[in-house]
Image (cartoon, rainbow, N blue to C red; front, side):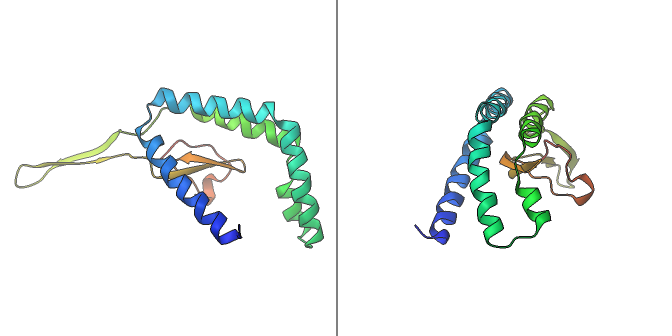
Length: 145
């Protein structure tokens, strides 16, 4: 399978996954985050083994040292990834929260409700939920939509 086909297949799977996550309860999402954290910690050795292959390929392609450092999964970084997921699970779930409500001249009530829109980035990992890429908040965990 070529890279374009692979990416399109993964994008389709992510879209399907987004629908399932949108319907999930807060408890289900939190349980999934906790299980993901456990799987990351449990598979540290396998993650590092696979990462070594990526790092070797990056060096062969001549990527700069700073980029290689960012790609390198140390045990500390893997622990931080898992901890980030646990911390997000502890945050309040904003989905369904009504942030503003007003009455139109015709009497109809209109409001803004928070809904799931995509993915969250947490210390180098992505998972389906909401997205935070504000440069001022980079590296911080948010559970936001």
